[in-house]
Image 1 (cartoon, rainbow, N blue to C red):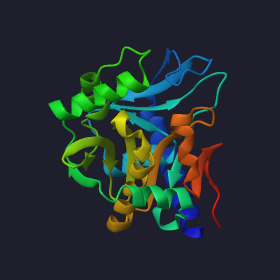
Image 2 (image 1 turned 90 degrees about the vertical axis):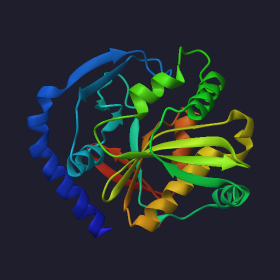
Image 3 (image 1 turned 30 degrees about the horizontal axis):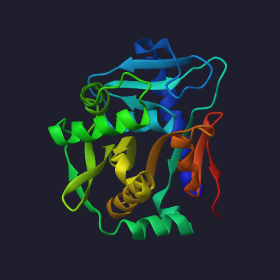
Length: 250
């Protein structure tokens, strides 16, 4: 625990030196809340061509996220529902349901590949978006071109197959000692497999094998089911009031 605290303190110090130089590139952009919460969303974002591993690490450690070549955080005026969440893979204490999901998906084959908008990926992503977000004018190819693919930092796809059929894909960024979960989509016909949870279990396993100590899961949003399930992984850390605070576990 002391080692983690020292790491976070060092990141905070380094980011305090970086932030004034980066601030000139950022702008606030107001849009409808992407999570259908009642207040407008205010994105504080900047477009970059590339970032070093350490700079990206500092952004993540300070609660920022990636969308395509944009780095952003939320500056919403009347809402603080989006809370960055992080796991420390070596600390994980899996519950009965998570162990059951891991066992249920032993027949899933896992493949690692570069991020690619091929026809198979786009078709599955399109099916997922039509099923889960029919009210939006979403387009899978646009997701790949504007959200998943980037020139900032190395990334990869974690692809999940059942009997040769693609049933899920996780988009992740990977650094020296961090992994960043960008997005996950899956075949709605196999929702019973809980592949969202299985994807996080797989990322934890990868981090343990590669000795990656920090896994960023994006935002935890208490009142949004698609975002709140992340807190079932314990212990986890929430970025609150400028610091990572531990929840659950020993």
